[in-house]
Length: 422
Image (cartoon, rainbow, N blue to C red; front, side, top):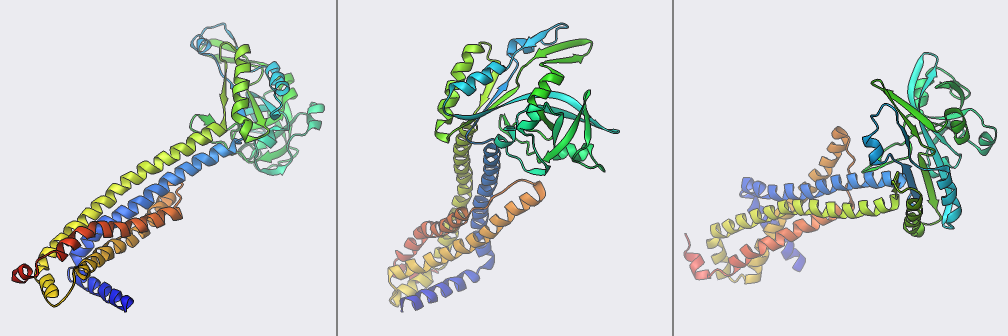
């Protein structure tokens, strides 16, 4: 009996709204755009946050990345004609870090050298990365063909190189990849493998690899290219002596990352008073990014919530006008025995029908807009189930909250006064 009455009231509400189609459609637009804005804005925010989090996770949540950097006083005087800038991480730093902490699984050094790769008539500016085989464990990248460096390559001082997919495509077009000889500066290296590079920027943190990298054994890099880099420009030259450009430290568990990073920081500060290094802790950046994501979602949700508020006010305004128009109808219904709660129920049903219909249309638009953004702007978007459910619940809530006052006003009309209304 109750269900039958409710269905009859819903049908009556829809019939009443259809008497003023244009007004009903315009009233629903506030909900359509409000709900669509909630879903679309949260999808854009979620996509951007997920992209940032994925980039940070590629660095390894249990890793600490220590990089050499030129001190400010040397950078300011770098334009002098004769200058030897000595800064950065030392081989002794690598030994001290490796031997001083029980919480460290392994350390991976890297020496970075600018060079030019040449195969036949093809050339490509490369960044040589002199490192150890453990690099490929800590900076995990897909192996496309061949193999990576091994301890045997280190022991034999082998002139071998692992290229990125980008480097292989640029230098080895039309040639057999594995076993090819690549001339890098004045030396020849044998290609033993190709890996996929996923270089990316995460705020102020750069992933350790770049698409122009070429990986060679650390001892070969030191023997062939030394520790001094000479840069010539506009008649002047700058010499830099940097032993190691980077040390990646893998900690045994995430719980020890921040304490180990603080301890390494204290130790390095004793031997590097000029602060010629910087430390990046992906775990700390990950937590910061998660906090930023929460704040971002709150801000976007609040902005979109204003649209829903405006839509709700529009519904209340139209329903108040409807009460005025239907005053005589309300009087007749009260005169023949309709109770106040029935009048309230009827008007609430109409407002909920308006808001829910607008909400469902808005959900469709809210799902469509992120898809279009991804398709045409190449921006990652993620439509989450909770944002869709939240929007649906909010649309029902808006109908109830903003429909209650017009419904109460209609129910409280004096039947005699209402019957006299023209």
